[in-house]
Image 1: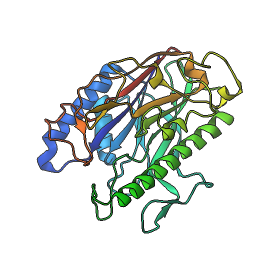
Image 2: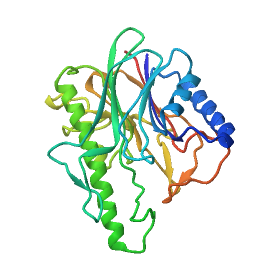
Image 3: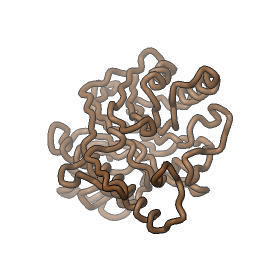
Length: 314
């Protein structure tokens, strides 16, 4: 059995001394959830700094190893990481947007970017029977809109629409960078082999930015062409979200609405081996249009996202 988890652990920063008790409670609660599910590979988002990541890894036990992405554009964009109870190899930082799409305009002043705001991180993980899985974790641009001057709201509808387009274009370009990485992997050394793409993609299964990752067009799990092999299978990624059942088929509550925005996608080599797909049933708070969520006791729950889990019988 090989188990993959992805989890946005929500603002895990090394605390000031006065906040140490709350930080320890959050670490203990995060580690308890991971330990209970016994994953073989965990993609984490929302890590604030390396020391916080190392303290979480330490809570998981001495056998756990981990690595963080090294590219993030500001203290408000967090590094991603991968942790496993076995050694990781072939670490690759994935930061550049596709050359044919970059530069991408991101504000009214004409600022452009050629790199993702959150760098993705790829590794090779070894399973208990010495099989290898290539995995990448990412955190795409948030749907939360920000406006000039650090504002999170506006009364100017034109400004709202323009900033929405900037955010959408940015998330789409970052999704394209992930797809470019997967395409290269599946056409190269990992052709016909297990590949996992996971992370906080900040939109739902049917969103255009998420669907960019499924291509070439064709089957997903469920009705249609899933059971009919075709030439696209070698490059296709399948979203495990289509195999989830209520009530554990969502990962975040946005303005009172449950949605699945944290995803695990897999290559053809893994599709027939999937035995379980679900989210871990934490009672998380709803988020709003402001970046802050209502105050809650430390570790209750430890994040405003549910972890997403996939088990494979390899």
